[in-house]
Figure 1 (cartoon, one colour):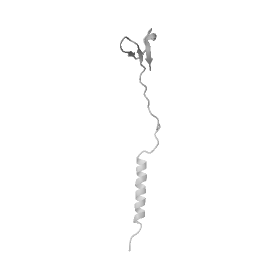
Figure 2: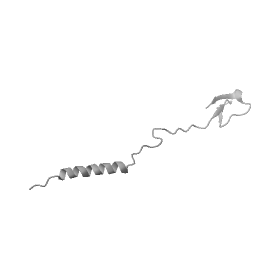
Figure 3: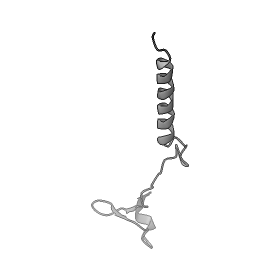
Figure 4: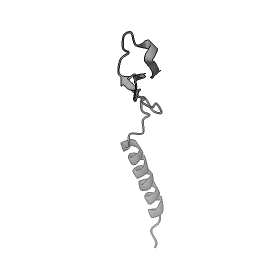
Amino acid sequence: MERRGGSARSVVWIGCLVLAGTLASGCAPRKHAGEAIVRLPPPVYCYRTLAEADCFASPLAGEAYRLIAYQ
């Protein structure tokens, strides 16, 4: 006589392993999934000089007429 049911038992074991792997992988959605963290650069204020532009982290008092760019 040939023993049957071995293949059904294998399917159950494979199903249990897949379920255990899914549960162990931490498939819960993350709190901030899909959101990107964007860090803006610090502000820069650039002023016209005789040679190249000089840039500073804060605006210079009384030099607004030389301001050529800010970000």
